Image (cartoon, rainbow, N blue to C red):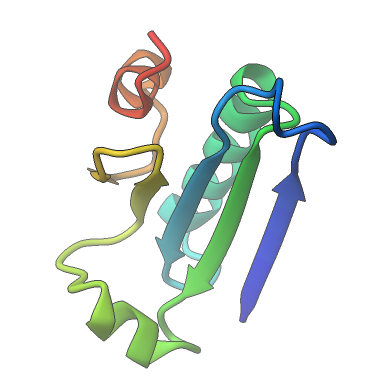
Length: 104
């Protein structure tokens, strides 16, 4: 199951750079649900209107997980803006997540 949550500014010429995020989860495990809830809250609070979040369940999309070289889950990958960053865990430490996303 891949689900995409998109929120973009209409005028990209004046908009801050959009964020492209991928969250790899394992079904509806406790940590996966926490990670999904936490990243959605962080995105809506700090990136409203300028992010794309792709949610990849590795049980259903094994090829995607293999291509991303997943070693632990849940895993958030910030694809854009560069540099690429990887965060493992339930994303409950908001300050750490914001720092990794370059939003501190």
